[in-house]
Image (cartoon, each protein chain N blue to C red):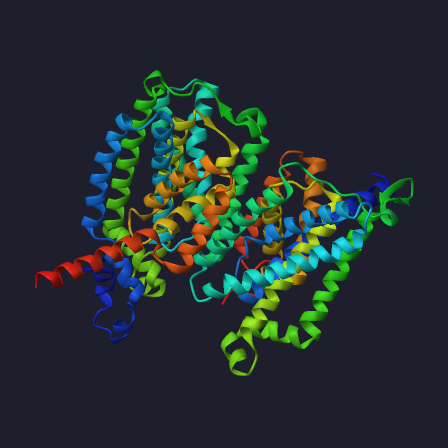
Amino acid sequence: MKPPASGRAARPGASRPAEARAPGPASAARGRGMNAAVVLGPLSAAVVLLALMPALLPTASLLNLQSALGLALFACATNLLVGYGGLVSFGQGAFYGIGAYVIALAWLHWQAPFWASFIVAPFAGAAMALLVGLVALRARRLYFALLTLAFSQLFYVVVLQQTGFTGGANGVFGTILPPLLSDPGHAYYFTLTVAVLGLLILWRITRSPFGMTLRAIRENRERAEALGVNVFAHQLMAFVIAGGFCALAGTLFVVLDQSANPDLLNWTQSGYPIFMAVLGGQFVFLGPALGALIYEQGRDVVLASFSDWQLVFGLLLLIVVLFSPDGVAGLLVRGRDIARRRLRSLRR
Amino acid sequence: MTGPNVIVTFLSAMTEASSLFIAAAGLTLVFGAMRIINIAHGSFFAYGAFLVTTLVGASAGGSFWLALAVAGLAVGAMGAAVEVTVLRRVYRRDHLVQLVVTYALFLILADVALHLWGTQARSVRPPSMLSGSVAIGSRSFPAYDLFAIGAAIVTGLAMWALLQRTALGWRIRAAVEDPELLAASGTNVPLLYTTVFSIGGLLAGLAGAIGSPLQSISPGLDASVLVSAFIVAVIGGLGSVAGAAIGAVIISLFDTAGVLWAPGWEPAFIYLAMIAVLALRPSGLLGTAER
């Protein structure tokens, strides 16, 4: 299997002897997960399976799955920054919340049609991400994480305090959705369509020259800079794209819940897409989506029998982080490779 | 405003600053020595406060001071246990992994706290010898609040003495500069990290314990304290204990002024201040630049 990631990133510097020791086992594992078949195969199988679900599942389980689809988009969009860009943003909850609030507030104050605000919301998220990114990307590493955290908390307290406009701690709720989406089955198919299209576009982005450059910057910022890459512009673009898609995921929350509340923007919310990415596997495109599915289904199962979902999730996260650096998807990819090798040796 | 009013308002702000400083000092010490952002620091604070409510309640009218000491030490021991069992495995991994690990601990500890202490808000009364108030001109000021301010000052001086005047402090400062060289010259660096992390836990637990009579203690305290402590530590300069003191004073004055002159907007101002410091001077007021 050819690793396209390190292939393209490394090409310009390949003649230099230093290149020989640059790609370690980690970058080999990272490159392996980016193969087209790894994404398109499971994705199309999953889409067919998910499309059949309304016929098979009771409404409660269907809602859970619908929630997982929205969170899958949220986690994969966040992972464009955290996994592909190496930019640990601890404030993506802000953009998720903005997506939800654009629809809810437009409905509350101006009786705007859902479809109009649904189109506007991702752009609002992207525009806000542009403003935040311009400031936050001045800082590096942990300081960047703290800056994004500060921005999301700023949005959170403003939404919380400006009760007259935002409804304060109660948030906004009501019959926000058009009649078409009030039917659970329709809402599910709408969410499925938006999430799958969103994931496909994100996936294309990660495979584009832009996505490759973003990864090159993650691996070696100084070298990328020396090669003439405008690091700041690339990272800002990634931040804007992620902000837009997080806002899109936020609109799906409104489709699920017919509400928006300030907790969507709180920093504790911003942790979840990161955990889902780490749990599922950051270096496989659909890893975060897998993490979202495990999170939502796990919560359903655990909460059905006892109350400590945070405890179980925390332990699960600890175990995965300590013993499988590439998450659950990393384990699956590794397992598949071992199985293939076995098969090949059997045929011989 | 009249003289006594100004003094009382100022002292109230300093009371708020005191528990904030002790919490932020632990956070900043751990970050300075180990480059770890410890999300579970907020949990340690909450555990300190919850432990006091239990211990004071258990020994009906029992000793607040004993509860204070036990809560601080117990949380310090928790810190040591966390370092040995979990953190030690991720020092060589990237900072995202370290962040996720401490956040996972935060989630686990939050659920355990729900089991131990329930969802009801709890409160604790200050010890009887400090339950009165002190007259300041025409106004009066709670005696316990003065104690809290004093405790923060003593903690600050003790940390200064520890870091500047003892062999342990010398090693901690050396670990910030070059852990490999320190290990090569005979210091048991893993043990040093355990010590530092447990001091961080002790400080968080003490901050929670000292702050326990000053606020209502309920689930969610962990998250809110963590964010405040971060703001304080960041503004002062992550890694600088003196910076944490200045940061705590600035934030508390800011907060008090905000409540007086722009009610409803004061948290927004505080986050704006944090953003401005991080964007313009990431090393904060007294921090040293990130290498």
